[in-house]
Length: 380
Image (tube, rainbow, N blue to C red; front, side):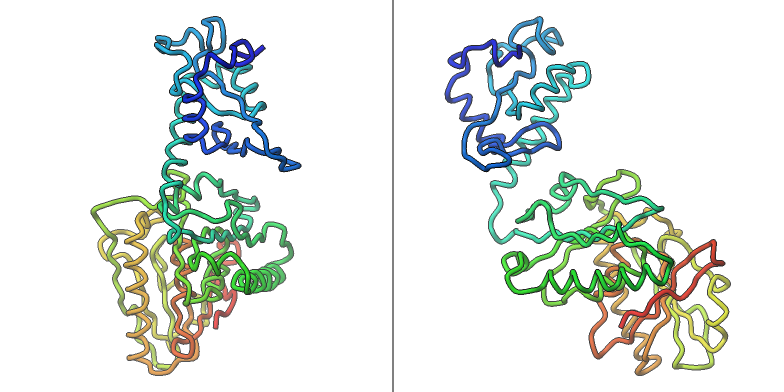
């Protein structure tokens, strides 16, 4: 018998119950559950399906009942969690796994989130868009909790978001790319279709994990008429929240080689790693002018992109680069692009192309098993 079942309901004050339900938003406070507890999960019949669980048990013999000093008021709201029956049973059957400190952290994190979200205005809504593909042969999940943390103070109108799922796409390289491009194009057309969520939010928060060429292609499909905030998965912390820093990354645009044919131009992005002239395929011969965007005061590395300001600074550098190339070379049909860059920068490379102004991109992808950079796809 659980602690809640042993306690008469009158022992917990009505105001305490009210405070707990409001602070929890009527949802299970177990980390990652978030089940709404005021209707049945299948029939949606309204009712109270919640349980008030003690963090430190009502009696010392109960779960976590003898851990540290007991609360002065065992029925105080600070010692109670709103839980669904399954999560309540889980924490009380496994008190060594769900310690007092762990449950207090769950409660604090959940209630802080509810307080934050309920204080937001309607102008901060966003449509969450996810592009998921297999990385290293395995799908990478993006937890909802990380999405809501990353986009704050904005909030999603639909926690499930709008998903472009490429994890089930198979085939050889070209077959995969063609199928993936078709799926991306179709899903993005649906995203902007009349009656979709984006009509209400007028804003997109994009979380994308896929091969770099597909990210560039995705960026090109996104409309410039609706703002898009980009996010990346940080290698060190494993989350998607942009960091804060007083220092910002500076970028340098330079010419690596002067070619003999002004209609042939290559652009190298030496950001996550350095792309040397010797790394370029044989077809990028001496006829080609080769330009580079790289880090001005740091060695290219996979973790350089940490803040939202770093991404904005790249956007400005990329646009300036395209204008400089246009001044030097006039009207170009295409630029051969060799990217060593993080996912959000790849998306920007496609998204920041101006229709009828900028040239298309012939995108090359690096594959060590195939001998280096190989042409992958064209982005018009």
